[in-house]
Image (tube, rainbow, N blue to C red; front, side, top):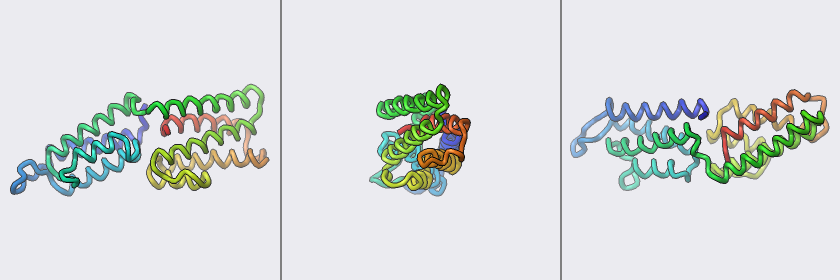
Length: 220
């Protein structure tokens, strides 16, 4: 199921596009099919930002939207451009809802990472080894964050806290997920440095479940 925040943002830009085609028509001399400039600019900016944050700047949905809403490399507020842009947005929404947007590399990564998370679960649930389980799950998280940065054209070196901040700042995921990522990696750091009293088995199990969900919502 598509992330609720992404779904709501996509619904919003689709509604704004529909309004451009029905309520914000503004014929001008020489442009009988023109739409109001201010609502068009808002819709175009929000749609572009959404597509970049969800799919990345190089995905066909993002580049196609940019192409079909421009004339001579400039966004132009005319009905035809809005109709073509809405076609791209509707295709993106459909693929999101049907789960067709992940590429092969992302699926392979998820399968590999899920295997490691399953190993972490085995360590803790079958043998009570919460400490190595936390370190293993934290390593999966760190590797995924680096791949997520690469996907969105962001620097992928540096500390996890830097990667996490960069991904939040560039709206790859919201503030609440930024907090979760930081908390998970803090737990991993405690485990790696022998601060075992700072967490218990239940927190590690919650961490593993949380990371698995995070990977599913943000493939890389």
